[in-house]
Amino acid sequence: MSKEINIAIIQTSIHWENIQANLSKFQNIIDSIISDVDVIFLPEMFNSGFSMNVAKIAEKMDGKSISWLQQIALEKKISIVGSLSITENKKFYNRLVWVYPNGEITFYDKRHTFTLAGESNIYSKGSHRKIIDYKGWKFLPQICYDLRFPVWSRNVSNYDVLFYLANWPTPRISHWKSLLVARAIENMSYCIGVNIIGSDPENKYSGGSCVIKPNGEQLKGSIDKEIIIYHKLYKNLINDYRSSLNFLDDKDHFILK
Image (cartoon, rainbow, N blue to C red):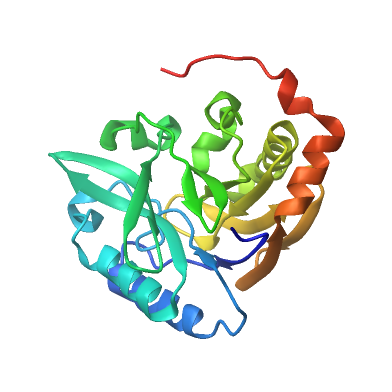
């Protein structure tokens, strides 16, 4: 069990619906990482942008983007996580894929598809939460619009890190900041937000990727520039904060359906 874990968040723009260009771009950024890193976080739909054009961007689980993620994980001996458009059993999913250093995969399908952009008309919503165990840490993965629904992220499983991969637009960036802080405070966990910059045919994006402590204090963050955010997470920080306040002991008990 690791008492510390090193993360890297990649905040950048995305080439619209151009998978190969995005894989090449992220390859170059990842190759520039010089720090010791255990997990690399990529944004939502990192290989295409937030597109409903599944005929052009959707891949199968044995497609080139998944293979690329596995290659990175194996070569760098790290975990890497990002979401992308996946087709499976004649359905489409906005699927978050976590690849372990040995190339094995686990995934989470976005629960709350974004009705305002028509995502709910194209992509099937996920039905299960997922806890990812890595080096003795428990991560709860979420995607973008999930951030607005606190019941779905409620810490009933004693996870350590809650993270959101997103394409969160500039007009509502204040919501992004406030909700990430709220999720950290109410769940007494680290909260990581991974967003993009630049623009696509529908929106502009101004970043705001960050790492937030369980007490709501922002540790690292950036607005509107391409950057790799490095940070070390400490298990004793979570444990000490929870043991001193014990708020999670008074949580409501419920079953998600």
